[in-house]
Image (tube, rainbow, N blue to C red; front, side, top):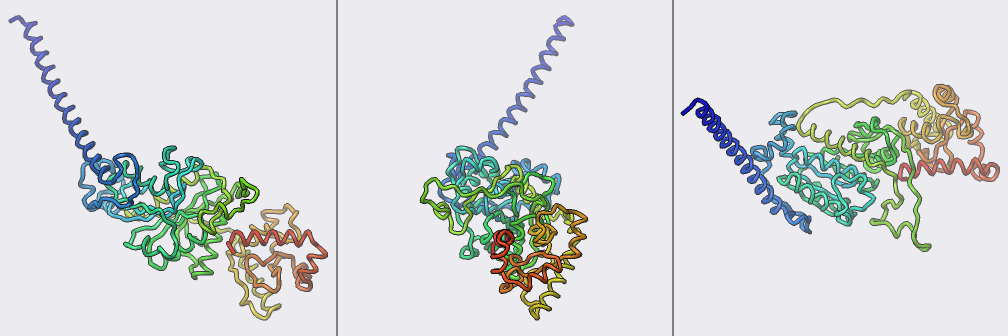
Length: 459
């Protein structure tokens, strides 16, 4: 055989060998893919979502979460987390149980990232509010096909296709004290409060504190646009957030809880207000539209990115806590707090002088900060048209004091006005009826401002 013929045979043989090797490699990959596909399909079927629906059942197949990371598919899906935390810390995450209550824009994103980070068991709770078209601008996984589906069941359906090994229980239920044992039993490793109703939120947070459960609470995400102002801090440190103020006040007043609860909030003041109620028929009232008595009917304008970031922040905080990855959150600094302490002390002295006791003073220095900055803008109630701010404002504070508007009521957040010393003396010598008759514009302005405080503190 000639030299050229031998060379062609060698080339052909090598090509056949490489081809055989490539074919074997491809077959192994295909086989592995098929095994995974069958494995995942069997999990989906066992979770009742093979047909694409969530079904009416909220039960899940029990999985041994302690062995999850031994599985090839799961460990590969969580590779980046394992590389970040290390295997032992990721096992803590995978073996954890987290409850998420409230599954709207914030809660759906928080729950989604908890799932994608490998949390082994999730309890998803939301009352019978269904996915709507208008909620698709901020929901983590819902599609148009999900419109009309309860949020809890919508999440369960999608989650079972993302990480089918997770034990997912979905409850279409409103949280209230009567179901506390049902929802908070089982010693969850963390509870995420993503509720936007004050009464329900306060009840949940108080129950978690009483039970010694770790809880992270989301404050107001609506009507905001600046992602750089989102913070995690103790509830006592949250500012510029009406929901935080109301929750803080109610927890202290109703449950004696003054702090110790981490919250996600924005330092940004809301950019928009609640939209007014608009009935479709003349005889309709707001109560006709309430899904649950006491829940708000008016709509908060929402830029979808902000609740999504709130949810991502919550998930990141919880996952790192579960993995025992310690870090210090950025401190929230309250500037010029001494000014508010001085005003608070001045109020106490005035109450002692006029009423013989300071027992009816129902505010602390932090609430004085709200009254002075948010209600009266650092100026006398009689000087609300002035534009002085900044350092000039603080100079004027040295001439100001807080006094009761209605002398028959305690000195609370909705009954204190800021006046100059001489104005305060004059106010103490007159009555509200005289002010209403002689200065109706001033009377109406003060009444409107104090009503704002009542609304923001849910009084």
